Length: 343
Figure 1: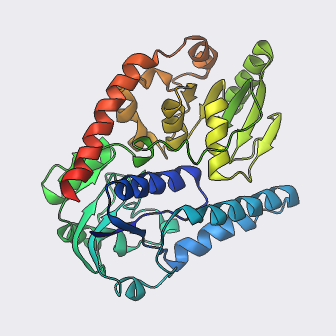
Figure 2: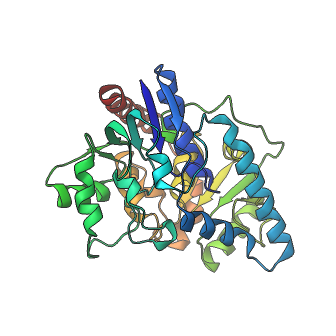
Figure 3: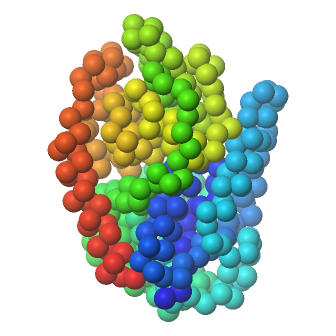
């Protein structure tokens, strides 16, 4: 079967890259003729490039350029259609099935993404369309729902989402409860892509939002344990080492080797769990809708920093990953079953 995947595969975000790779690798493993639909609307494309090349700090600018080059080079892992920003060009290719998602492809509030109806099935040339682990992200439940979103769900043959908030929102729109699955970055082993890193004995900081108190606690904790502080992906000038321009595959290596992880991101939390790291998640409005119920299902909601003062104690209390991995395996199997059933 000829299958197209439409998601945010080519942004400069490590989690976004691996959610796309997870779906792609699993569908390919099932024996299908799978291709990434290499599309992004012009507004989204220009906004992301401008966000990376606009810093006035020359060191940070060069790091961001390296990051762009690494991500563009990493696209070789996908079989892709020719790149386009044109919806009409996408519609010229016929598929037996198109998978929309994962990621926050349904965030109609964030103008950065270009308010694009293609992610609601418009203009696609396919016998069937399903969503897979799609998310509304950090939208407000009170915001007026655009008509193209309301009507767009009629284009789907089956719907799955990756968080309870998105499930509630779909049910509000369609009066049908979608299936909740997990992010595809958790259903595939990426070891064949992973590039090892030489560093050991460090706290990995993968965070774009954090406060001064958290920074000071991390500095004190690192000193007390004789650990380095290594920041990847996002610049943290107080860390011992900053690696902004890092390939997705080396990014995996930094997670696997970390003694501890501090993150304020959705995928930073997921990859901490994937590699059974001792981690803390600083909750914020950008990830609250996406991560809270997932951590509760794994009985890991205690790893959310509820008070800055408990950060160090969370690190000093080892996570028992035996029940976590057992619960996660159930969710992985359910997620694979969704794809197996609807492909």
